[in-house]
Length: 432
Image 1 (cartoon, rainbow, N blue to C red):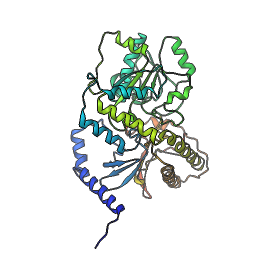
Image 2: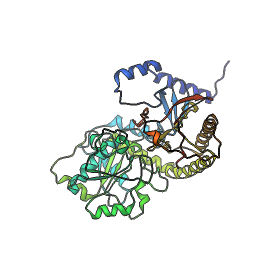
Image 3: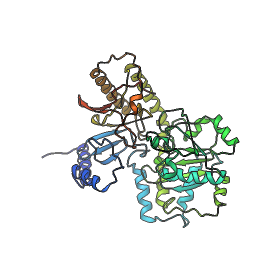
């Protein structure tokens, strides 16, 4: 008689779940997507898309049972399908889900919990459903309060996909030669080369002296991801307080929700316009229950502390790689079962944004695979490991395929040694 142990039973159970989650074979799913989904909606690894049917923690699973270390999903902030978050949403959905025109304790409880993580001055919440929606509302608040439309934004910034935000998102339009820049949008140089960055606090003070206000977009970096602080704007100093803060992505761990938090003065100005603001789904009881569960998990599992510890550990490992390898191209680790993306104006910045439960063991696995792929690539190109390399980036201006965010992606795809590498014809140094 065959005896099946607990580990085998768990594996069989997971396999059964994945099998039941797949409605079509992969080829049919691709066919139907091409037929019914807009062609501008890009997909990861378009040359050979991954079909994900299940996820848990920092791992995602395809229809064949292959597991991928997820370094790309900052939405699943506390880990994919965290049981506490799933339970909170399911329990509230069994009781009630309706709009915020009715009184419900979840709305005010969650607003109170969020405000407790912020400076006292930021005390008024508007709950919405996505980062784009939050940033769009933040602009409306700012325009009403200041009476002006001019906006200062960072080069390579991305704030959302709605019309008001495309104009202030150079990340989206700076490759398009026929796009006219909105004359009320003023682009300044960023401190970093990704889609995030900071304006020095001295410049912010100049803006305020001129009657402007400051919006901190925390959609990508909030909720403890920077490690030392809960919010990235706090890196500017304890005395610095934005006028408006926007939140999204990690706020619901995959549930569609977001928030704008501002001062009483800005909120009162918005009210004085005479136009009522209402959002059908923003702040509904289920969303608020999920939001509170996410905050609970961050605190209970010390995920902010984990981000600091593992982040520093990973940075150290990557510094060693920078010293070891003279180049990094557009690294694709998919065939090594690691999901990672590149970013920056020249696509030469590796973008790590895994779930916050990412561990030191995961960091070791990631950097080990990265080291292996870089070594193979350098050997294929006949490069010496410690050789100096000076490269011009003019070649990046050529027409390129697009990445997961609609950005252009340098280089073709090369297969070899069991890995998949996309790299530019001209190599680039690691940017850290």
